[in-house]
Image 1 (cartoon, rainbow, N blue to C red):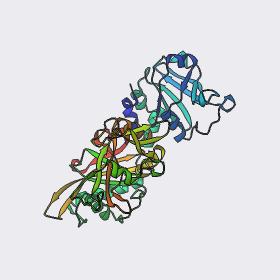
Image 2 (image 1 turned 180 degrees about the vertical axis):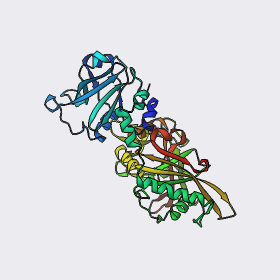
Image 3 (image 1 turned 60 degrees about the horizontal axis):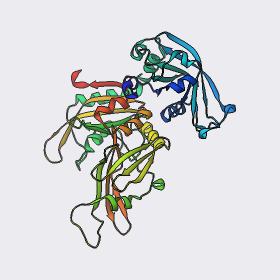
Image 4 (image 1 turned 45 degrees about the vertical axis):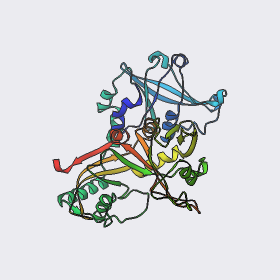
Length: 397
């Protein structure tokens, strides 16, 4: 079983981390604090291994609760970095070998500063979640509560629904019309800000027939730490488009493709997540090179900044002629607090991918233009990343 099997926790708005003790580790009650576990503790403000010094003098000990089918036990956890082995982060749970078995799946959840360890191999977490008195249930209730601002925005969109089809306000046509028309009717002025659109709530509108994937955000690589510049990437790995020009051989080059983990695309690119370095690389198998990279922590911060709370609005569309598209906004999926840990896992598994949209504009200045490095999620993985607060289909009442 993997963390993929705990999607119901993510959908309930619960952040968590997983550790699986080995036979040797369990005998000593010691486990490696792997990357996602360290990140969970750090992001929750509970403990930072990154700033912790090595040695027993710098070990920290906290009370913890262990839960399995027999009930709960009050134990303690020790978090430390040993003097040996480069100080690889460790966690020690008192008396764990009395209660757990090798390869049991331990789910760690923080609530109000207290750490609870659920042995999901020996208790039914779904039943625990459904219990009104459990910490999991309280976390979920708090996480999925609807704010006044969200209710206000939902009422505004419902009012637009009652008006039926609305003519596009984007006279140039194109994909952006569905979003810009909605925002204009909501009184949101067009701007280039990366901040959420409405009182801290991001609004993403798409046509109902676009169901394969949703765009999360756009993020340029960290060029300073990459091995190639945008121009060098384009001229080495790109392809000619349109009519060529001998005097300007790269003026018509482009690199427009989808890049995901594991499976290289026709240009040879695939994504590689380097967990220990907190980096995401675009690697090319044809040349065996890491081409350019993004800092994983910055990507996660951008995800949370952009989608701390989001309304995903679906619109039916119809055309009355050239430049006369109309939209009827009929459905809203309201999400909050996407999981950074799940974001990294979906990058590793291919559930989230990146679209390159590069083309050359000037061979003398080595100018490259793009429409962003677009991080997108497959529709089938959407609910894993985003806890759904409410989902309203106005046509169904």
